[in-house]
Length: 372
Image (tube, rainbow, N blue to C red; front, side):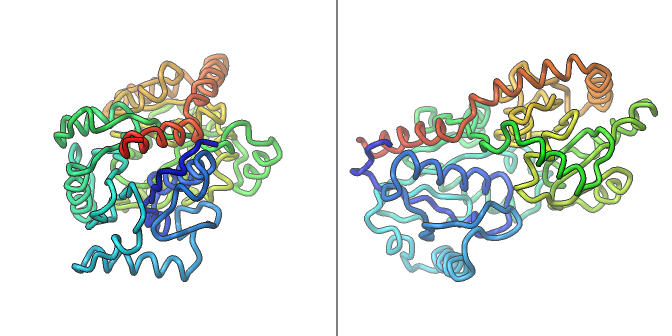
């Protein structure tokens, strides 16, 4: 355990109280491992949460009273002149903000994690509410004392798109939960039975929204030879996001599972023959790393952070090209040897992305910010 008795960090954990995907996944595991490495007394949260429920992306991980109180305090802080966060975070050396905070405390050093820049680079893929939140977060990021980027791609995008000074932002890769490494065969078989997955399948996991590029995946799958479609089912798992209506209608032609609980996600991923993720932009790409950890061959995009994360352990395709994605599916589904080779290499690469490593590097970042 690291000695952090001279430093007190408070992390804005309000995204854990609402429906969220990647950011919630990051905060949940990051805070848990920061406390494990640094000691619980050194890493606090706003609102204070000593205990949390198991991770779910569909609801709060705190009890109802803590959830209501935390969101009420956030609303008062965001929409009034009261220095609510100064009161609630007194004694903190560092306040690590999320995209939900509008008025961070003035007495602590300010930091934040930059997860992606899609609001700036691809605004046409987002509703106005997302863009407003991104603009507010950008103003906060520009005056922060230091920033974490979840990939080098995201760091470079922040420097270029937001004008962040290079020395103010450092890359600390996110991690992958231990549960994705070699889930027990009994759990994998149980998930197959409960979801009725009798045939071998190609899997996509992600929110149903434009950036995930699911329509191109459906086009490529529909263009496969009939023999491959007869043998391999396409399975899509994930909650409905924004602008998902037309895509949802198309998902009726494949197996759409909707939101899959976190406990089922690792064995579901491990059950797949191939994992495909043709996203148009990712700041890190949790589903890709999770599939690699689970020992599943991956096809993903050759843009944003995805080549950085996957390295040479996945087939990379142009996410704007149906023909490239189709060709990659044909190649991978037609070769058990290639699937096996990519799966083994991917699992080994995924071991580089561990939450304990992320937590230790994050504590070094906080020490640098405080001058320790």
